[in-house]
Length: 192
Image (cartoon, rainbow, N blue to C red):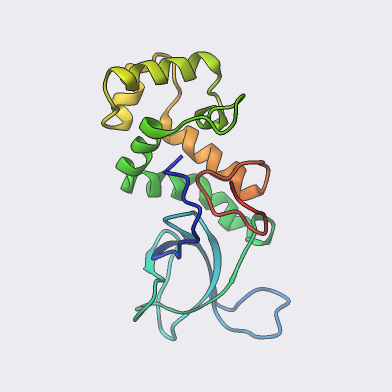
Protein backbone atom coordinates (compact mmCIF):
# COMPACT_ATOMS: atom_id res chain seq x y z
CA UNK A 1 0.00 0.00 0.00
CA UNK A 2 2.19 2.99 0.95
CA UNK A 3 4.38 2.87 -2.13
CA UNK A 4 5.68 -0.66 -1.49
CA UNK A 5 9.16 0.41 -0.42
CA UNK A 6 11.66 -2.39 -0.81
CA UNK A 7 14.56 -0.78 1.05
CA UNK A 8 14.88 -1.33 4.75
CA UNK A 9 13.78 1.76 6.60
CA UNK A 10 14.71 2.37 10.19
CA UNK A 11 12.01 3.50 12.54
CA UNK A 12 12.33 7.05 13.83
CA UNK A 13 9.46 7.03 16.31
CA UNK A 14 7.56 4.32 18.14
CA UNK A 15 4.73 4.01 20.62
CA UNK A 16 4.95 2.08 23.86
CA UNK A 17 2.84 -1.09 23.79
CA UNK A 18 3.94 -2.34 27.19
CA UNK A 19 6.36 -1.33 29.92
CA UNK A 20 7.86 -3.93 32.27
CA UNK A 21 9.66 -2.04 35.07
CA UNK A 22 11.26 -5.22 36.46
CA UNK A 23 11.87 -6.90 33.11
CA UNK A 24 10.46 -10.08 31.68
CA UNK A 25 9.58 -12.87 34.05
CA UNK A 26 12.14 -15.64 33.86
CA UNK A 27 14.84 -13.28 32.61
CA UNK A 28 18.25 -13.52 34.25
CA UNK A 29 18.55 -9.72 34.38
CA UNK A 30 16.07 -7.62 36.28
CA UNK A 31 16.22 -4.49 34.16
CA UNK A 32 13.25 -2.54 32.83
CA UNK A 33 12.19 -3.29 29.25
CA UNK A 34 9.54 -1.89 26.98
CA UNK A 35 7.77 -3.28 23.95
CA UNK A 36 7.51 -0.73 21.14
CA UNK A 37 5.63 -0.45 17.85
CA UNK A 38 7.38 1.56 15.14
CA UNK A 39 5.28 4.24 13.47
CA UNK A 40 6.63 3.88 9.94
CA UNK A 41 6.59 0.14 9.19
CA UNK A 42 4.92 -1.12 12.39
CA UNK A 43 8.06 -2.91 13.53
CA UNK A 44 7.78 -4.67 16.91
CA UNK A 45 10.80 -3.94 19.10
CA UNK A 46 12.10 -4.64 22.57
CA UNK A 47 13.99 -1.73 24.10
CA UNK A 48 15.71 -0.75 27.31
CA UNK A 49 14.65 2.64 28.68
CA UNK A 50 17.16 5.13 30.01
CA UNK A 51 17.57 5.13 33.81
CA UNK A 52 14.88 7.27 35.38
CA UNK A 53 12.81 7.51 32.19
CA UNK A 54 9.12 7.23 32.88
CA UNK A 55 7.16 5.37 30.21
CA UNK A 56 3.53 4.46 29.95
CA UNK A 57 1.46 2.65 27.35
CA UNK A 58 0.73 4.91 24.38
CA UNK A 59 3.73 7.21 24.87
CA UNK A 60 5.42 8.25 21.64
CA UNK A 61 9.22 7.95 21.87
CA UNK A 62 12.11 8.81 19.57
CA UNK A 63 14.16 5.73 18.61
CA UNK A 64 16.07 7.02 15.58
CA UNK A 65 19.76 7.73 15.27
CA UNK A 66 21.07 10.45 17.49
CA UNK A 67 20.28 11.46 21.04
CA UNK A 68 17.25 9.66 22.45
CA UNK A 69 15.57 11.12 25.48
CA UNK A 70 13.85 8.00 26.91
CA UNK A 71 15.26 4.92 25.17
CA UNK A 72 18.81 3.73 25.93
CA UNK A 73 18.97 0.94 23.36
CA UNK A 74 16.91 -1.20 21.06
CA UNK A 75 17.59 -4.73 22.26
CA UNK A 76 15.91 -6.74 19.51
CA UNK A 77 13.23 -7.03 16.94
CA UNK A 78 10.26 -9.15 18.01
CA UNK A 79 7.71 -11.23 16.19
CA UNK A 80 4.07 -11.22 17.20
CA UNK A 81 4.33 -14.41 19.28
CA UNK A 82 7.11 -12.86 21.40
CA UNK A 83 5.21 -9.77 22.55
CA UNK A 84 3.29 -9.65 25.81
CA UNK A 85 -0.44 -10.24 26.00
CA UNK A 86 -0.82 -6.61 27.08
CA UNK A 87 1.01 -5.51 23.93
CA UNK A 88 -1.33 -7.56 21.75
CA UNK A 89 -4.34 -5.94 23.38
CA UNK A 90 -2.92 -2.45 22.84
CA UNK A 91 -2.37 -2.99 19.10
CA UNK A 92 -6.12 -2.58 18.44
CA UNK A 93 -6.02 0.87 20.06
CA UNK A 94 -2.61 2.21 19.07
CA UNK A 95 -2.46 1.22 15.38
CA UNK A 96 -5.51 3.41 14.55
CA UNK A 97 -3.84 6.32 16.37
CA UNK A 98 -0.69 5.90 14.28
CA UNK A 99 -2.75 5.67 11.09
CA UNK A 100 -4.71 8.79 12.10
CA UNK A 101 -1.50 10.77 12.68
CA UNK A 102 -0.32 9.75 9.21
CA UNK A 103 -3.68 9.98 7.43
CA UNK A 104 -2.34 11.40 4.17
CA UNK A 105 0.18 8.56 3.79
CA UNK A 106 -2.59 5.96 4.04
CA UNK A 107 -5.10 7.90 1.94
CA UNK A 108 -2.39 8.08 -0.74
CA UNK A 109 -2.13 4.30 -0.48
CA UNK A 110 -5.80 4.03 -1.48
CA UNK A 111 -5.10 6.41 -4.36
CA UNK A 112 -1.95 4.68 -5.65
CA UNK A 113 -2.37 0.97 -4.86
CA UNK A 114 -2.24 -1.27 -7.89
CA UNK A 115 -2.20 -4.93 -8.86
CA UNK A 116 0.31 -7.19 -7.13
CA UNK A 117 -0.08 -9.95 -9.69
CA UNK A 118 -2.44 -10.78 -12.55
CA UNK A 119 -5.14 -12.06 -10.20
CA UNK A 120 -4.91 -9.79 -7.16
CA UNK A 121 -4.99 -6.11 -6.43
CA UNK A 122 -3.28 -4.72 -3.32
CA UNK A 123 -6.56 -3.27 -2.04
CA UNK A 124 -8.13 -6.75 -2.05
CA UNK A 125 -5.69 -7.71 0.70
CA UNK A 126 -7.58 -5.44 3.09
CA UNK A 127 -10.13 -7.53 5.00
CA UNK A 128 -13.63 -6.89 3.67
CA UNK A 129 -12.63 -5.61 0.24
CA UNK A 130 -13.75 -7.85 -2.59
CA UNK A 131 -14.18 -7.27 -6.31
CA UNK A 132 -17.21 -4.96 -5.94
CA UNK A 133 -15.56 -2.69 -3.38
CA UNK A 134 -12.35 -2.74 -5.41
CA UNK A 135 -14.18 -1.58 -8.54
CA UNK A 136 -15.99 1.13 -6.56
CA UNK A 137 -12.72 2.40 -5.08
CA UNK A 138 -10.95 2.44 -8.46
CA UNK A 139 -13.87 4.22 -10.12
CA UNK A 140 -14.07 6.84 -7.36
CA UNK A 141 -10.32 7.55 -7.36
CA UNK A 142 -10.26 7.86 -11.17
CA UNK A 143 -12.91 10.58 -10.94
CA UNK A 144 -10.92 12.42 -8.26
CA UNK A 145 -8.19 11.26 -5.86
CA UNK A 146 -9.32 10.70 -2.29
CA UNK A 147 -8.49 13.51 0.11
CA UNK A 148 -9.21 11.89 3.49
CA UNK A 149 -10.65 8.81 5.16
CA UNK A 150 -13.99 10.64 5.43
CA UNK A 151 -13.85 11.23 1.66
CA UNK A 152 -13.22 7.51 1.04
CA UNK A 153 -16.13 6.50 3.29
CA UNK A 154 -18.44 9.03 1.67
CA UNK A 155 -17.60 8.19 -1.95
CA UNK A 156 -17.41 4.38 -1.67
CA UNK A 157 -20.83 3.06 -0.59
CA UNK A 158 -21.00 0.34 2.08
CA UNK A 159 -17.24 0.34 2.68
CA UNK A 160 -16.26 -0.30 6.30
CA UNK A 161 -14.21 2.26 8.18
CA UNK A 162 -10.90 2.58 6.23
CA UNK A 163 -8.88 2.89 9.46
CA UNK A 164 -10.35 -0.39 10.74
CA UNK A 165 -9.57 -2.11 7.42
CA UNK A 166 -5.96 -0.93 7.60
CA UNK A 167 -5.66 -1.88 11.29
CA UNK A 168 -6.97 -5.38 10.63
CA UNK A 169 -4.54 -5.80 7.71
CA UNK A 170 -1.57 -4.60 9.78
CA UNK A 171 -2.40 -7.11 12.53
CA UNK A 172 -2.63 -9.94 9.97
CA UNK A 173 0.82 -8.96 8.68
CA UNK A 174 2.27 -8.68 12.20
CA UNK A 175 1.02 -12.18 12.98
CA UNK A 176 2.86 -13.49 9.91
CA UNK A 177 -0.35 -14.74 8.31
CA UNK A 178 0.16 -13.26 4.86
CA UNK A 179 2.01 -13.96 1.65
CA UNK A 180 2.35 -10.23 0.96
CA UNK A 181 3.59 -7.54 3.32
CA UNK A 182 2.39 -4.14 2.21
CA UNK A 183 2.14 -2.12 5.40
CA UNK A 184 4.69 -3.71 7.72
CA UNK A 185 8.26 -4.89 7.57
CA UNK A 186 8.02 -8.68 7.75
CA UNK A 187 9.82 -10.52 10.49
CA UNK A 188 12.21 -13.13 9.15
CA UNK A 189 10.54 -13.44 5.75
CA UNK A 190 11.42 -11.99 2.38
CA UNK A 191 9.05 -9.16 1.68
CA UNK A 192 7.13 -8.22 -1.42
